[in-house]
Image (cartoon, rainbow, N blue to C red; front, side, top):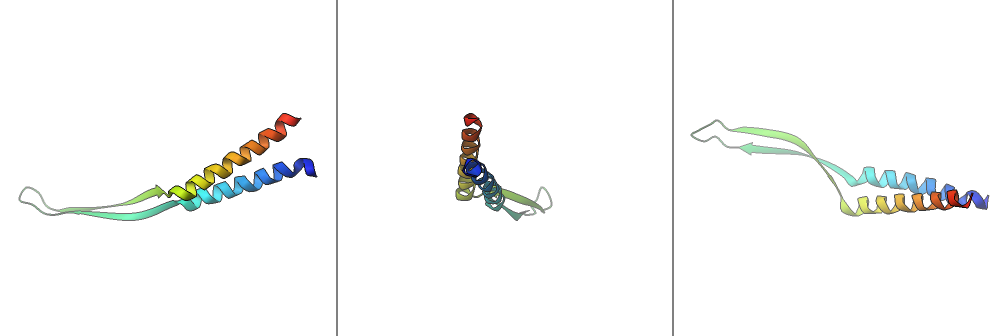
Length: 78
């Protein structure tokens, strides 16, 4: 059982990495309005803006890196 412990930890860390990455993405709806001028009629544009929140994304990358390290350690032993 001890032999597979790093693999189990790696799988858990991989799941944590995916969850953190999904949580780090935030989507906001943005509406920009352009006024009417003498040259053209005003209009508005609405779109979804997605960004990645830094700390959560960084934690997901660290968790993924540790998971890969643990798997590589197990693979090299065999």
